[in-house]
Picture (cartoon, rainbow over the protein chains, first blue to last red):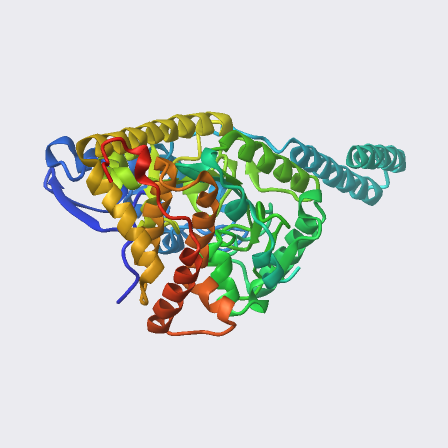
Length: 169
Length: 363
């Protein structure tokens, strides 16, 4: 058998397959048991597929992003449909249009409210600063602005020193 | 540390049980973390997986929590050894089936385990005996912060910790409790409980997680959602759901005793008899019998100190542990013989049930 269909909401194996005709258009949804219950699919009167589709834009074709590919890892949207998992952290930027509508149904909110890795973020802002300064330095040397270059080099040393102090803290 | 010494040393799960662990056997919190700038394990090429594994392994092994830990690549473990770690809830089934470039580090007391290149680069887990969500969260938070000193985790200010599956986004935290709910099972209330718990945004699973059955009346209850709330809020919400399940279970026990004490005590007494005398026991029958003895301990038919014996047997009656004790593999039919023999010898000297706590019981 081919890959079993995955739940459109949470990517567990789908056991509930629903087809509804709304405004003369056929809509199909595959859900796992838990999501089907949560969405009230087992109770036909309380469930409208149209709501679910509108909210979640579950149809990959309808988002117009089917051809998008992650620049960092080469992951495509059809890969996501198949695996239910993303390729790399950058995919969340690449497929933002697909992820965001999904989150509302999947979670208890759409914005992070928990722990923040402060130390890792401090390090990242240092890396970013250094990368930018090193670019400036190369640029200054290339265009023979040696005073700028000297100043930038001093600044790089200062940033590195601050970084080492932070790391030793 | 070797797998044999790991099995023989006392562990959080099997040796700390007391009356405080009567209904909630253990609590567990796990965090999903990934390294920025690297493909998730399921999408990374073999060479990348190795590189990630080594980076994580070095960082994890350097933490104080993992001093003299059990540190191993999955490929270096036999099938049986992997199964043992699954049965002790120290690795997942998914990791036990992983290819190259995956592994686990388990702390000496088996309270912490960090899986590497499972679904995410890191799955950091802590196990605590009894109902101890806050303590579990605090200790895993410390380990996570220690790792953060050396690893750049993939993180977005809006989506939180970035995980392979969007269902784990945000906190990346799954907190769960393993609960023993025999009275709710006997009185056919579990379905109702599962439905109510689902409505509160929590999930109920069997003993070994997704897709496993609930033999032994043991269930895992965990949070469904990970994004939009802080860790403390999720834990608070889960805690109050667990508390109300505990109350329902206690009520169900009282009702069973009121309605027909004889019927309930008969189950406990028969379980004792079968465990002492049977010659063939399947894994799920053994679990169900042990569960009734455990209920007997809670009701006062056996001394409190016997609860930890049952908790140890819950694990040692599993196929991996049984075979490891014999130092070779057996087919399922032979395992049932082994299991019965093992339990017969355990119960030969097990204190007899004393049903005098029940005033209506004239015998």
